[in-house]
Length: 236
Image (cartoon, rainbow, N blue to C red):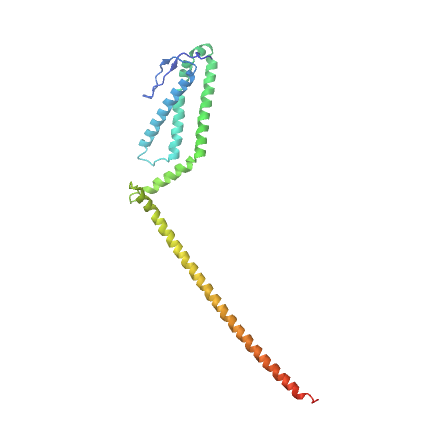
């Protein structure tokens, strides 16, 4: 198809659920203009569906954010397909449709199928890279736990110094208490080690005194033995 293959591209109105078709002249970017208009309508419809579903479920258990996100994606795809109906697609490429209606239908089916697959793959990739499932579940858990909280939640006072102090001072006090406890344990351990060293030194002194006493006793005995031997020796 050339740049003027479809002369009657439609403008999709997002002010109502049924978009109107307005013939618009198409240049080389006519197909992209139709697609952009269709996606704009689909996005608007998805937002309306999500808002309506959220408001209607107030009486029942509120769905999780991951479930809401999936519903928004599904609704967006439905609205996208509805906004890009075959009749609108054929109206965008009216000249080609008149010449090859069956080929136009085949191209449209392939286009819609590939578009849905591409959108799902892109959204899935974003969910995996950003870990959206885990973040949604964590946020749901935080909201659920906050429901039973009677005390008002913390809010910044507007003075950075006070806000930082209120957050940092409790941590520093806790850390100081931990360091003091650790210091006391080390001091007690050092005291026991010092007592053990002093006891060892006293034991060494006692052993030295005992060794000296036994040495003196041995020397005295040895002297007595020599004198006794001398008395039994015959005179020269």
